[in-house]
Length: 314
Image 1: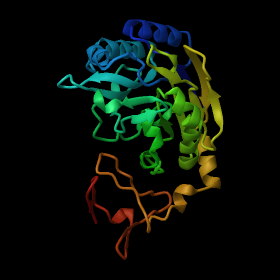
Image 2: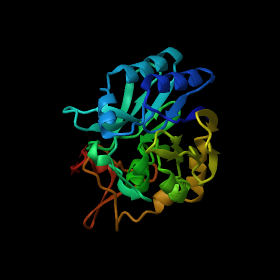
Image 3: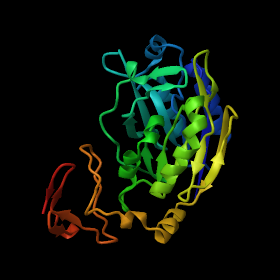
């Protein structure tokens, strides 16, 4: 069991003020292991030009400030949705960072699914100012368990979550989706999607969310959620802002749920499988002596002497 804090934040355009408000609230909490921030925790602007102007490199003042905060207070931090300046400055990367209690960046993921949709009467094209990421990050070992990094719209992609949780040994115990869901899409789908990802993958889901009106053009749905492997909502932060809540999570409950309903073992790998050309590797599960099928052959783990994302030698 571990203590965790979840942050519901209403970002504005003033980067320093957002940082000061959140860092002050963190310091009032004791015995924390990991703090989760929502997407766009640094700022939310009214225009593309403002978004590009305010963007910083990963070694800029904002991230360096949180790294110092983590080290000073020996706290792990999940910073979801940082506006990271790209090389040519014409677009940003929407990056989710994990900072350890020594102030080191130990996990980094840039959002791969961009929000180009019509939400009610509002047309949003994230790709106009955001460069998509090109890889999926392996789950990160933290004091709170193995954490997988996603961001907002990634929540809608079932295969993405399954790939991150498929391995019994190395798969994620906690899926994270720091978000800034619109009010229109949030009211219709937010809780359903978060609970579905938890149930399908039999893991915890932490979804720290932006809330309320940020400016004349943007309003977020709120309702930061923590959901357990059975789909039970452990925490719903509603529309309060800005707010910090703490919650204890028992990782042992994952195994309890999976033992009673072994979905991962029941998958028909002879008929379908997960494949990714990125750095994710879904290893064979020693515990259940899982086999890989190659045509009519069954290959055991001890027969494999080399493995990469695209190659298997046995």
